[in-house]
Image (cartoon, rainbow, N blue to C red; front, side):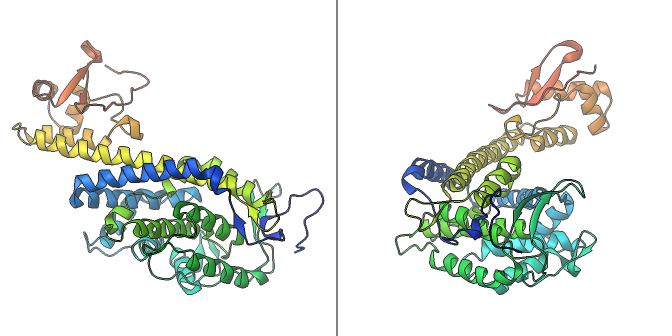
Length: 415
């Protein structure tokens, strides 16, 4: 593959003379970085306030959602129960052996990146991560090289579109250069590691952004680069958190991750990454490649992810307080079951909520009770202040009575 860009094609980031020196305008990003730190601080403050027990529950659910999200970004849909089971084992909450090796491998990689963030990141570790993602050396139904850097002669390209009409979005460095490229990346990652006893050479959140762009631009493996790149982001952010607070519990570090936010903004994530890789420009003196736009996108996504996580923590606090209140009301098993279902559905603000609200018919179906019994149970829950009534007559619906919570309205109300 030629390393020269054609006159009509933008120069790939690794073809720039200043590669791999990546830089950003710290002054222009200062407001965004300050907002990111503020959002992160608010999240950590909420976690400190709710106690380790609830943080552990949040950690478990966050880990599950992050695993689902990082796979979904690549178009892979994991089995939810398999992910929950694997995460529970990693947390010591279950000992049932896994039968889904793909899920187990991904969860292991995520655990190692976060829980062992202080251990050095070297090539052997990355190769073991990539091997864990593809047990048996299979990606889908295709055999791939695992546990080592790519070595094929064909160009490593990111493409989309139908066969025969593919669109090439990016071409990575040839395989012959990958080993030396990875040496430079890993040396940089180690030397820029944030430390509690030293002034950081690079803002920790911005460092995670640069690390992700750099690794994705090398694309060192035959497959799994996106998932490994996001695991490196998790590791960089965990290192940053520990540098700020050496006593930060591991559970806190797992409550937040970037994969869910990247999935939520999948189109803009890919677009920002692709623009940085294909339309790289130099800083004023030509000594480095300017990646300010990419870092800004990443930092803003990080901030939004922290804001969403704050809402998740508040929802967990709301649920806990509600369960305590309900536990003093002398409820029967049916009522506890339905309230549990409503709490599990959560709040519309976070994309949840019990669609259309609870009705007599739905209550009867969930509990197996008669409609008359369902009606009495619901009226009792409303009288005790655990449910609020919405609508009248055949349109009467019940919602869990948590201040600030709402539920999605069904497109059509069935009597």
